Image 1 (cartoon, rainbow, N blue to C red):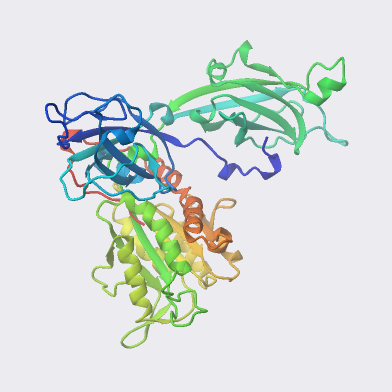
Image 2: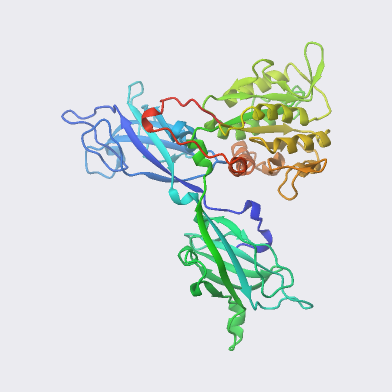
Length: 544
């Protein structure tokens, strides 16, 4: 069982949202002489070139991860279970994010015949085979839908009675820790209540938790990390609400084994339990919200190998790695793939004017770059034309993106500002003011520190513990996530692993931050368009 001392309720593991993927194909290759092709695995549908498969794929969805998928289509000609014995009709590659991020979470792709190659990072939904390149193989239609129980949120309150005394000079300071039972018999912490000081009959505050985290779990009771006892229950039992069935004996196995007259270490009672459906991140994506990426990097001198901006012909520098790690995931939710990108802290040509918010592509009229590859190209080009110059001011870039977000507050767009810097912030007062102002807007800020600098001051902007404030005003929401990239660098030098670790951590809070904005403004997701209205090429997007 996990250590209570290591538990961080803000980063606890909760089951991922589950997505159901439906597959259809159109105009498949006709591989049979006397009958139409029989595509499979899913189920096999006889004699059609336009199958709509009934069997669906249920996948865990993690916004913060790049979840690669490969779909292969076969014609079943024999009863053999060996897939190589069947005709290969075509394949396509995509990510789960691309399917969800398409308009109406419905995506159409052309199938292609490709020669075999190793792709161990891909989660195969069919089995790969070789084919003849160059033929038209038809199309595959992929539709994603969130399972209904992923929207349910449970609110409950518990109290305890006559708990064991653990403190020598006073009573216990009890709190509850919730564990979810995993399929392999292990347990994962999914919630911890507040501590009630000096009280053997505590009443804990009501709290909210996703229903999907409640299927079979145990609840140990602790006092200042001293184990008092535990009990088990289930979602079915909790859903009965306050009743005689929801009064639990708290048992301490060690005491029970040592003392013959041991009864229990107190009781825990469920006071209330209510389940409601909430809108989810996927609901807003399906409704067509655009997540708008705005990458910003501090400029530097790429000529020296010691520079963090050094453009090696053999590997990416840390700035490029951070841009690619975060950008490749979020671009799946931005269908127009146009990313405004800015630099800050540089002298610009031709007259050496100092700027703390300049377009990386050099075009002040249109700072958009096409895709993350376009952002990287503009970044490398800017390194050849601008000169590094301090101080490191964050406020100008934050304010510039905030101006864009201010123009679109109807829930149709959400902005994610990615700032990458190797310097300690120079305008903390102004930046705090900018963050507080931006907290009421549809935007989040990710700050990645690269290099060996001390970034302790940056933690002040990350409002996980204490909400950022400026001149007596507190930020309406926690919108800033700061991490030093060095904490994610793989020791063996594996850049792909380093990038995956970074993206997983910095993007994990984005869905909840988006939802908190929508909830604070009373914005509901737009209905997903019906399949007949979904174009083959999605028009919307989500921005960094």
